Length: 166
Image (cartoon, one colour):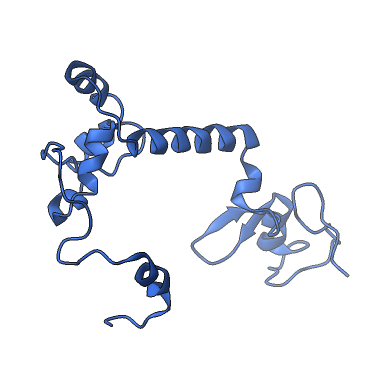
């Protein structure tokens, strides 16, 4: 049978000294911390008590999760599209958000471009962390992984079941 917990997630105080109790009161310092809703996990770390069955996602308002995931999905669909924006609109829009031509370079076969342009929504992050590639998108730009040839669909489907290096 599971012990009953109060609203703070702490076991009810029985008035009896608990493990690690110090002289001078029920439960000592550990008991006092427990009554305050603090879980002393080690000598250097104190965290508020939480129900171990509640995940971080369950503590977030569902509306914020839905809004965030919807924005990420819309942005991903947009920057993976094959839309050619007029140059003036491309220049203005790319200062704020990730456009298809910015993200396309991230899929370029050249490693230095693949390791760039990581942003999903705001292009600010790539500028801020100096991870934006200066390479412009060009027609016929090869995509893929540098040094590796493209695989046919059947080879791609069995790839997860092959040993590394084969």
